[in-house]
Image (cartoon, rainbow, N blue to C red; front, side, top):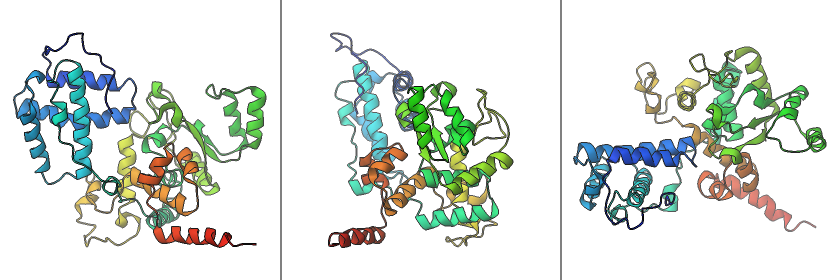
Length: 382
């Protein structure tokens, strides 16, 4: 997607000096105006190595001097590293092209440079990352936590990731007041400013509301934005089992305290600022998806006592670990295999039907065929 937010000065063929890092800082500031914090952060990770390469390896202090040869050498360096996937390279180079297009509009980069970025073509199959968390693995993990770590924070994180399919940032954003387990909790909805409906209409709605549920809310002013912003704010029904786990966690096992904004996070932390970070959720996801941590034998013939992936800070080195996004991918598949329509999944998980069908949904084909068989039989019912 092109960044059309910057208008070049009239008659601006003459290049204006601009350092690579200065251009990156300005570009990222502009992205922050209309993109989620996580998106801007991903842009930073993708473009920063390119900027550092230009400054450290090519000695470029002015983007006016950038040409196709510099791009070619950076591209060759990245491809020859041997540790980058095609899909990752596609994303990085695509973002670098956006950055350079901004540079062109700012009269800092020659007009032909951006088009010289050679972005590798990635097929639909290559775009779909199939390292989801399989349903049976998720059920095994939840069964272990239910038995040995009931109502722990890890139990809550895993249960929420699997049942709601929510993003890690959405889980981090939850406060205690966003959890509705009992009738009395509904009183809080009567004072929610974002529920722009009349009092009588709200009462009719609350009469039909079924407990328990959680409510994801976009609160960027106090450091808990949702990726989809206001459109990502939504209530989500949860099972009685998850409600029981949340209730026990809140009553007994949750670390008491508030965050730096005086809010009471559901997923609290004993460390400042009192709310778990997205990276903290990711680390917990890594640990609970290590087979040896949930009562399973190591499928990689490693000795858990000596395994490098058991060391703090090295959890991701286990080949079996899955990030929160893989829980999300697996959850979509699980929902689809249980007969949920893509439209309802998209609403529940704040995504698009297209993504549910093309990227997130990785069906267990034999199970899906069984569902189609049931529908086929209905065609001939009298």
